[in-house]
Length: 111
Image (cartoon, rainbow, N blue to C red; front, side):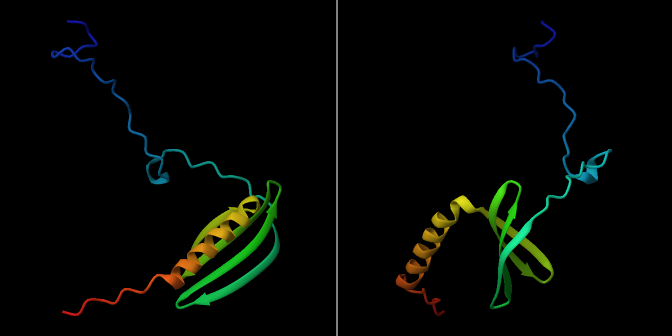
């Protein structure tokens, strides 16, 4: 029998150490990125029900972008849209708003 074959004729899989990218499983600390300077050009805030949104047009050395940040109970989630895609983003958002007005709301079924 060849040393890299199993008794059924298939090659054995090499034994690898598992990769755990989470810092909890790493021996060395994760490298940190240097902070990137961002200029805030325009900001707007809106409260919708219990959610707080912050829209900020920003600029850094890589270009302009829109950052949409949602805050819920002290937790933050962000989405960034490059400025080159803002017109397409606006168009799609307008289509969704139109569809929302045209599609009737489903009423819950009564037991």
